Length: 414
Ligand SMILES: Cc1cc2nc3c(=O)[nH]c(=O)nc-3n(C[C@H](O)[C@H](O)[C@H](O)COP(=O)(O)OP(=O)(O)OC[C@H]3O[C@@H](n4cnc5c(N)ncnc54)[C@H](O)[C@@H]3O)c2cc1C
Figure 1: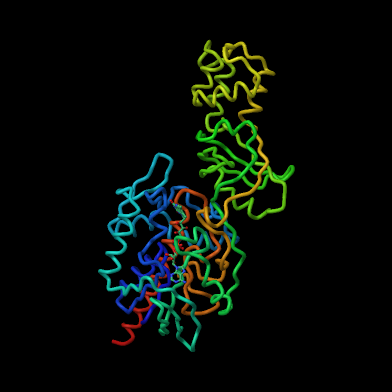
Figure 2: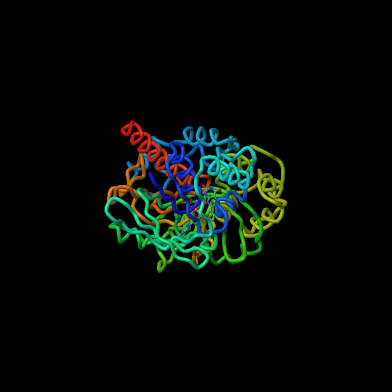
């Protein structure tokens, strides 16, 4: 069998490695000169591969049942085993985020490259796939490399060309047109997992400070979404997983007045409540109480915003004073002015609806012999390894299915 895999990101590399397990001729096309350009920058170059919290409901995906079937075939344990088999053992942080033992995305890419070479995958890098069409039971792929055009015929094609996020790393959504021509739907692509821009007001004093928060986005009285995690305050607003998980909601409501609400005390709420009511740290000052959780700069800021005296003893705080403090620490509200574009958002949402492929093999239900994987499909997860899980996992299932088909064909020939 002659198989083309388009795109050498996590989905494409994994698909090619698995498909090559059964021999056959596998060709991997990549328009960058090197493999895994985006994978190299993931997890701040440490490659956050998956997460204990991976489950269907964690993904922004219109078809939860599809996602459940997919994860039933390729959950965290299956993924870790597949990585282990390739020589990429993983370990997790206290909060359940998995990284390779090496903590190096570069090591992961080099191991995958060696696995591709060892299995005889032909790698055509610096080769741009212009498009593909179906011709009977085969596909004709049009490519260009060093100014010369070429047409090749394949029995099966795996599309692993990503979405539209971080275009300078290689994925620009250029093959969605070819998929539409073959009869697939393509839902509009929007940037996700990017910064949220907002009017900071007095909070601009806290530029550069990091907090663990709970964050919600409101449209009037309606809460559009909620997230929790680390954030950093910067020049124009906020960045970090705690807000990035919500940025697609801003992209989805470009013309609405939206508000970001941050709760700076949510992660230690019960301890904070005990502190304020004097059960902990009594008889320390209000300032000392806040220094349990915040930097001196942030503690001073919150006390000033609440119009309180830093020297007040905690046990002397009145109910009104406690309410004032909670107002500024638990219910800070900011007018949203925008969110990151494709240029600075980690993934895109949109693409081909997952329901158009089989969740166990990634084979198209519209065009047999065509496989769609990774960010080309309309499924995106929050920060924390959910997207690499989906990219590697969908690539693995497509490749394993193709290897199975090849084994079956060889048996039939005997
Ligand atoms: C800064 C950053 C940090 C991230 N960190 C994490 C993280 O820690 N954990 C996590 O889970 N996710 C993370 N992500 C998201 C994750 O990287 C993506 O979801 C994932 O890479 C998608 O994999 P993919 O194989 O579908 O697509 P991609 O990784 O985008 O790979 C697609 C490949 O196809 C190639 N290609 C595209 N079109 C063509 C064409 N026409 N011809 C030839 N080649 C083509 C591209 O050059 C690219 O190499 C991060 C993303 C960014 C930008």
